[in-house]
Length: 640
Image 1 (tube, rainbow, N blue to C red):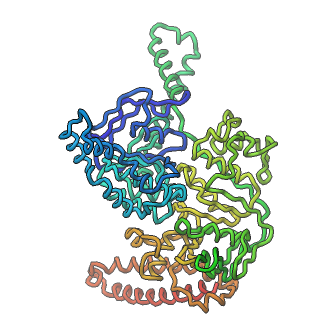
Image 2 (image 1 turned 135 degrees about the vertical axis):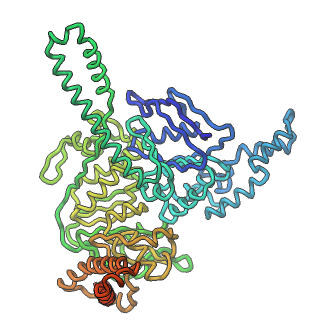
Image 3 (image 1 turned 180 degrees about the vertical axis):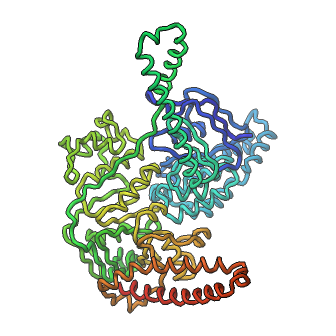
């Protein structure tokens, strides 16, 4: 029997229905992901499932023993409480039952109370809280006011888990979590015995957690079995079928409109049925809700600037003094050039923002030297949205004092520009505070891209953005000719954008790796023989082949201290050789695998021994060539 069933449920704000007579059944043990564009009503649907919001129409059926816990996007916690007290808040009902039993409350059925408490494992409530805090690495006496966004999210999850729910409802749980915490959460949900419903735009997270994807699209729910990758394949098929059906309906409507305009023939009595059918076709066409279009993003590219963006030599940064001194950056060296797309990866509190400020020249180093390129025009995206003026209208926020925006050689009216980011002209005079979280992020991106820039600095730009907008942003950043610094915990977004990653390796040490997250994991495994120190890597990722991108490169051995301190510039010929080596190594490995497959079952030795001997010899040649290529790549990469 389903835990929750929605039958013909409807919900509307204004004239557009968010839910239009939808059906949904959630089975025990299911892990359902809800996806859809920003503003389509995903959070409202989750609140209806949690019993916190009532639909306008329809029926909701719940199992009698259903215990659900709901974790919103922004957890509502009391800043004055301790972590222990905040988590205990998830057991208020259990604690009240225990208190009534112990006080022998007048008129209470003690036997019934005892059964209810035991069914909820109520006598162990304090032990359960301590176990949960320990499992989530939370300190009981820490004040809520002192916690970061990621730790507050952990507290909210702990509060939900101690109630022993058989249904867990999570709204954007990965926002503000670092990669370590996202991995932890994915493993927790995989092991959770109850059902899970999660709203998320983190594609890798959805792939690892979900067993079904439900898409909310134009007021309807579309069900797709499997994880997010399977959803993408099935959705493409559905949209193609929908386009064919709509095209046929539009063609029939056009034919009938031509016929009705003939007038005399249409007024004959025997044509009345055809006229009625035309009315139905017109009604169906009016009621059809077209798919929401894609945003159109374009960066206002400024002066190209010089080739060099930043050069850091043995840079260190410390905070505090004496025993309280903390090293945030320890002897870090890097060269960033125009066109580089650099990802910064590290746990919350590691010092990513400090390192970013050092590379931008906004913070002086305590040791080492920083050289900043000429004519840099920086556009900065702030994850905390401090740049937002909530009382300004959308139009004034984008272009204060002017109705026009100039992007390159093109002059665009601000309403048209807002339309490129999916804001209708009617909303141009709406206040910023009326926007949802995803819409606010989209508005910040609109303002960011309207400013001339040859360098983009994006601090967690993916929070709250829907998947279609994420994919468009990925393409825009990949095509951007200037430099990009990207702080993000969305591994698929990083993999699709960055050409190198700077990774925190503990105690102020940072190291640059070629490629994205997948490449870093592979290189770290080969460098150290283990997963990165602070980042528990899922085995499937370790065994996955490295991505073959233009800048993805093979793993290297760690350079010696002397080498890293005396790095030299490569010649033009050496630089071209270094860039060509990954493709050569990949081609050799591909050929080697093909030979292995041809020789695998041994039949070739009997049917064509000469060919088999030729392949064996070629296999040995490839092995030697691969070894030489690896050594050459190591020598060039450590010298560059």
